Amino acid sequence: MLNKIKEILDKDLVVNRHSDFQIEKFIVGKELSPSAQAWQCVRELKTRYESLGNLEMEIENVLDDIEIKRIEIEEEKEKNTRKTPFLVRKLERSLKNLEINHNKLLENKKNYKDECEKLLDIFSKIEAKHEIKKWTDDAAQFEYFENKFSNELNLDFLLGNPVNKELVRSILQLDNSSKLKSNFLDLVNKRKGLLVNGQQTQ
Image 1 (cartoon, helix red, strand yellow):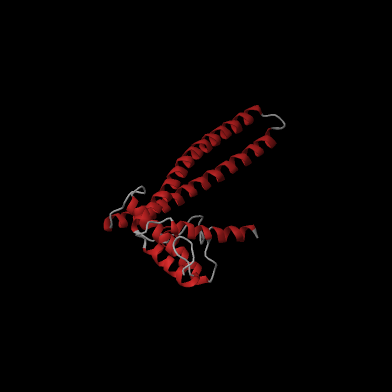
Image 2: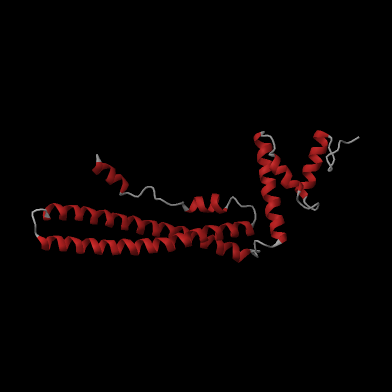
């Protein structure tokens, strides 16, 4: 049975990473403006950059552990006591586990790099077509939250869910120039007879 499982696993039908489709459509594509999509690329790249740095240190440590274990095996063989064959076998099993772990770390490194390549490709395409504004840019923030709140509100309406109170509070904090805020207050007035200040219409 184990051989059959290994045979299936060796086909690499499923890899331990996000597919390019997932990255493009869901991780980045869920954002509703070019700047927001670029920001999401940056967040994802930052996470993977840090993970790759940690992985490099783990790989170096494992390689050192492998060399230490090989030395321990040679030293034990030189002792040549009655326990030597058993101790060598234990050390060799430990060595094998270290080598397996090393291969897993290399696989993780490859997966992170593959994801980074896709994110860099998406970022480059956005950058070629649009001016990417900084996260601290007020106009970009306005557009980001206008789109975000509008999308969340539309989903509540579409699914017939009660509108989240925190979402309502957030919408009301938007500038009066917000089309979403204006449309939402018009809707509330029509449905509940409320004014902006919360008092009932006459």
